[in-house]
Image (cartoon, rainbow, N blue to C red; front, side, top):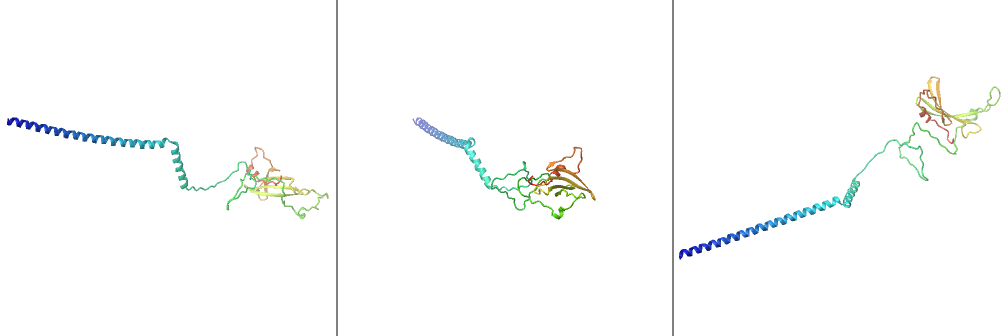
Length: 237
């Protein structure tokens, strides 16, 4: 009887121990499952946050207005901070050789600036205005002088304007009649060059503003077109 009671006690102890071990195992599995669920939840939250940030950034790349505003703001700030310094130098050329000013418009040149004309250019002023032309005195004209035939000659006088050019000078002569000293009757422009002591050569360039070009085979010692630009024609013609 005692042996049977001992077996029963041992079986009860084993059953109790078994139940405790199974209970501990169930608790550990429950804790492990809890940690697994928590990890999955955290991972899901991180993935969701990453996707949200990515979508937010992507929206700026495909949206027109925010990008345009950002670029405009950046350019505006860059121009505000930038300091641009420049200097202009050189020669200004007028394509149509004419400058027209509007009514009451004025043009000013900076102090120390210079204006130069192209050596090949010519200046001609037109209009009805009075020009003070130098006139010889009566003593210089010698109006009472006669020829051997005792007849009074026709008296003319010429005003010469000269401009250095190359190795010589360009001379323009204005020939006036005493009956009309307001404008010359004839104008002749020619190139003159001193060849030797007491020896000079001249070549007609133009008469009354019309060029007199030499023959094609004629060899000149000067630039014809450049000399033509240095002719000084009487204003008002």
